Length: 113
Image (cartoon, one colour):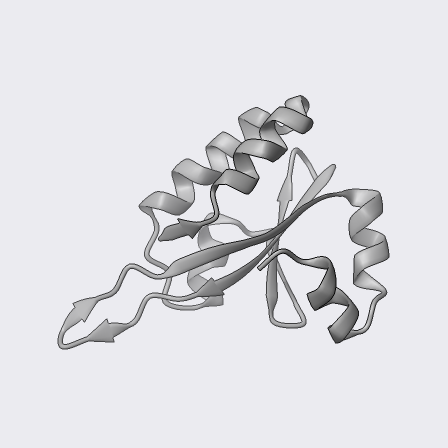
């Protein structure tokens, strides 16, 4: 998978240094993956959630949440495309709780796509 706006993860690693190792591990796993659907994604990240069309990953044992939009790999002309993971926001669990109560429009406004 191609990670779009990986710079946001680098910034999160600097801001939340206790999450840096978890973010680094997440990046390595995602770059090697070619998920075609959410079921395949969950084989790598069993605790990932689908929240109103966004995929939310737990980082550092649920202390942080990474909100993403995933465009899954597809087979085109017999070849599997790369797929993309767009980084929306890296949130503390407390901020995620606030985000999750927002309307769909409010959630979209919070994210940095």
